[in-house]
Length: 185
Image (cartoon, rainbow, N blue to C red):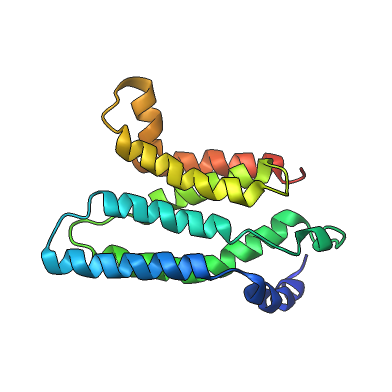
């Protein structure tokens, strides 16, 4: 697929994306960030769950109601999904930057949110097309919630739960490898 075809596909893809989850999560995070800034309170779990909700909204943007119809076109599913993620990411990245700067403290870097998003995309790549996005969008929320709830667990289980926050680039690399391996499924 060449650049001209991608440019031509960008407008209809932008119109087909469900923007409501991203706008709702972004608006809620901006409101919570404003309140926490005014109260000078620690963001704590708000940032973690906010990153997970933003990642879930990004993964949910992969939902394409026209996927069965577009299965016959020569554009591979992975290319259509990358286009969708690029379009939604162009809105989500500045929004997350605004939220992270608004919250008091050090904030949460971009890498953990990318790790959660990449994990959801990897899960969506390997699931059947009819339920892939619904299940995959829940993965970032589940992983971040489990980390918050069971964060005190030690050993290998505790390390695995917190891996997205402690070593996010390794998680992105493994998820990227899984997407690459499953792109022809």
